[in-house]
Amino acid sequence: MAAATLSAPFFSIMFGGNVYDAIGAGVATLFAFTFSLYVEKFIRIPFMTAFAGALVFGLIAQFWARYSGLPSTADLVIAGAVMPFVPGIALTNAVRDIMTNHINSGMSKMFESLLITLALGAGTSVALVLMN
Image 1 (cartoon, rainbow, N blue to C red):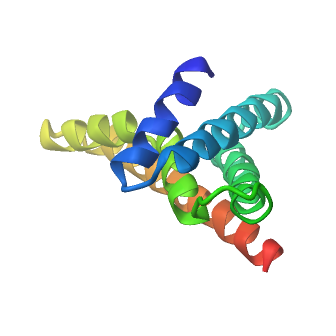
Image 2 (cartoon, rainbow, N blue to C red):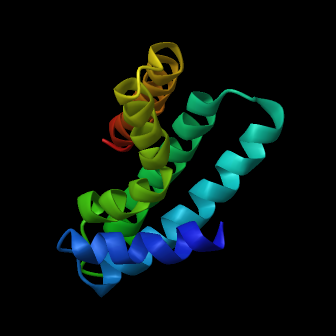
């Protein structure tokens, strides 16, 4: 949780955000990662926990951009907060398995990674729809 919270602000800055976007991304990631770990205790489905985390950081990013009074953009806060949730290592391992002719395990890891990515997008979209 600490690593995700510390890395998110730097992703936000890397995507062109300012210091306030970075702080918002850190706050959103802290609450979203904590909530997704809490949901994981009850629901052991990885894409459901990713959806819950994305919903929380999407809502917090919208609140941060609208009501904090700081010059920040919700898009850049979301871009920084989503990066710790992206299953990059699993996707890389899936491609490696497929390249080494381990088709079954590679395709299952690839499908799981894509479902988690879809859940992140769906959770963020639901948060944006709820706030508009």
